[in-house]
Image (cartoon, rainbow, N blue to C red; front, side, top):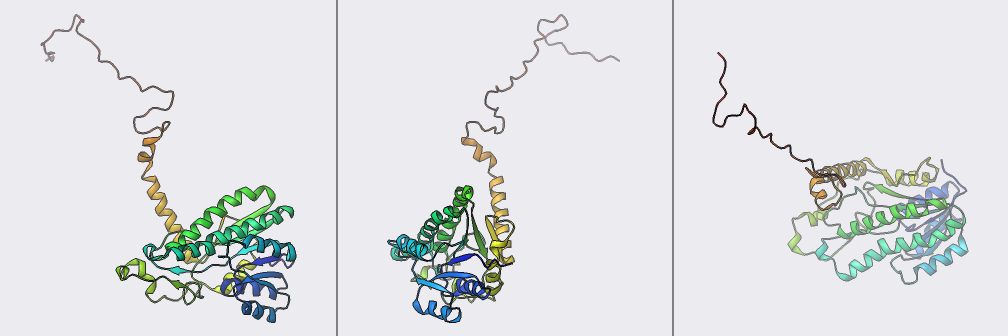
Length: 311
């Protein structure tokens, strides 16, 4: 069920998932403020939904990002839900990334979203609540050819997981949404590619050059689920949509569990209080070996004499 009384702030509302979520909300009569990269993207949505408000904002411009966001919140807030969705895909091996690509990508996909979330916290605290929805990666596993993408997504995951515990006393909730390939432009025509080195041809790092199959999940269905997300009875840290993403994550966690379990003994080798094989607990002494009984003084003991069996 959609709560029409909630006011949403959506980044990356000009295309893809952000646009579809904004349209779902606006169709239901909810209040939406979105950020877009280009003016015509915002105008297109506003023509269809006059109640839609927007601002042209690039999260990679981090120098004055906080000030711009504060002005938007002051003029258009308060907001109840922050949907941090903006970002882009950059394909290529780690070695192929230029310094400019690394810096720009992490500003747009990691640092910018962190500043965004931080800027909303004071107003959420004043309201005694708010919901932060951060788009996460898919599958919880690093893939070749997507090193910068996973750097940003793993960083945001750790950030939101920690933040979630910090803001819980103020009634603020934070979740990470993970999803399968939706067949939209994010992984496909809108993705950027580094200057490729032939050294990595025919290796996993360049596997993204191969034709992609049919996407397993629906953009429209995901947008519908996210628009209804605030009405969920509970908010786990990770909310997964798409069985492809869920199964990949489950397998990755199983593999990690097997790996960690196999390292119990080696992990304990540096611990002062660990009880490894044959090691006593702290404060305990090793059991003394039982001394052999000295029979040399017994009257029945005769060196070199064998015991005779009775017939």
